[in-house]
Length: 225
Image (cartoon, rainbow, N blue to C red; front, top):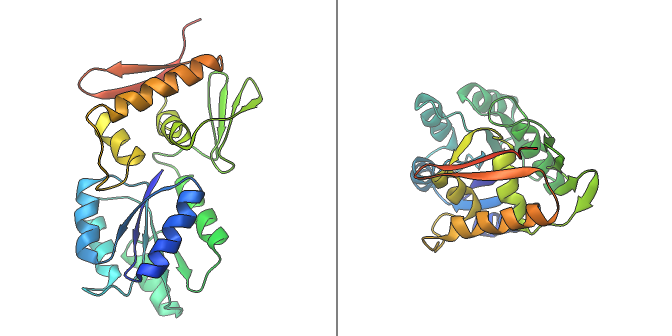
């Protein structure tokens, strides 16, 4: 799932990006509140990791803007401000969680996954459709109980579709979450990724079908018997 890291310290932002990508998150980075606002208008993220001490304005104002615009994207505030009043202000502005620097990356990843398990778009730690189960924390797929190996991109695409099983997922949403903001994406990149995942699922004898809804997007469903 793709997250937006809003952090003006480039060294920390690069570290967070590497760590989150290693944990199978897709990551975009914004160094200012303005850049973050632009990114949020262009892309739908699974979550936002937000530093409060941004160079152009306080990160709290960005949270307020998001909530005023009915943007319910989960926000995890990451900051050096440790006072109770700071945490209360962040949460009352609409943030979903609060982590004080310095922090253990394992805790950050766990808190992000916890946010993604909350009711709404997400369904839980283990996704199940037909004979396929996907442990989203371990990044492990099982077919008829057998562990199987998929590429990182196949895992990301399968998770996007399984979280909305039975519903059409817009092509733009798939593209945004498979490829980074500003990435050079060919006109058929999503189609190629979907085709490869279809072939992989077929080879694994997964009872899943990915339907193309022409001009709209993709729908994952259990294969007909």
